[in-house]
Image 1 (cartoon, protein in one colour):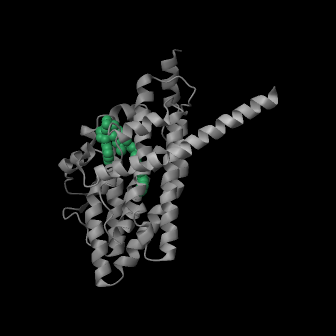
Image 2 (cartoon, protein in one colour):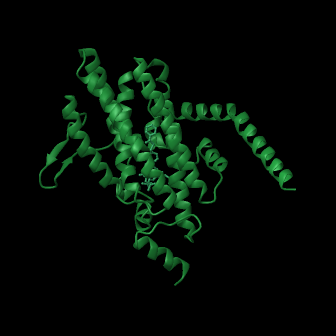
Image 3 (cartoon, protein in one colour):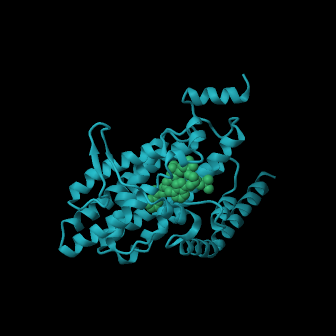
Length: 312
Ligand code: BYC
């Protein structure tokens, strides 16, 4: 059996591919692309909500938000580590993102303007992320799959805290209800875009499905999210932003209106509301953190020298 045949045998038998296993170059490259972009999304995704930590309306809300934003940073770190097992250095990955070569999820280029936006992000953005990530728990690459299992546990808490913020606002004063409705209106469509272009337009899907990097297509996952969100909007008593949303008994799913793909491509090509600000902020934080990385390297070198001295 050739290494390629053995690789495909494992994929078909639902065995995980591990870092030291043989894998086609294109599989490795595609994984580095997806996993690193996933990591960048987690880290850049800290910014819209992070901006609200000092303005959260109560101590309880502040503690929860602080912890949620830290979780996202942790997700980024697991994912960078998973990506490094494919033979790339974290510095390279971060540089590609900072230079605008590697993408991150388009949703994080939308600003969080009100406290209700923090609720909508937890509910819809983490909600969309979970739908996708639950299926990625079964991805064929072992380290990515294991990172997803842990991340999903934390994301479900994030989604619930967001929904609870929305529930409180939606059953509050007329001003609070209007704020919740406005956040839903602005975040609903960009959340649908998180699943990527339609399957027919998706450059990587066919290959990724064949290699079981992706387990469900962009459109199938988006449909799951549309269906679950339609019911949640009813619970909140808000008006659904999609006027064309209609239950289709034959399909057993909701039919929905068209997504504005021009907006999607405009945002992923760097022209969203906050693209420049997000990257500038990341670069600044990265530069300010240089001394931590230097101190860690110096400490590691000292430990190594000490161990060598003791062994001599
Ligand atoms: N935004 O061939 P396609 C979180 C790009 S964060 C930007 O369908 P693929 C959270 C795509 O990369 C969790 N770009 O690609 C954090 C490709 O460009 P390149 C985020 C997008 O990879 C903080 C091109 O369009 N989750 O939960 O097969 C606070 C063609 O697309 C987007 C993940 O990252 C987009 N929305 O499928 C709160 C999930 N969509 O690379 C919450 C992991 C597409 O050729 N990623 N593009 O330059 C995936 O599952 C897949 O990569 C995607 C896209 C479904 C996103």
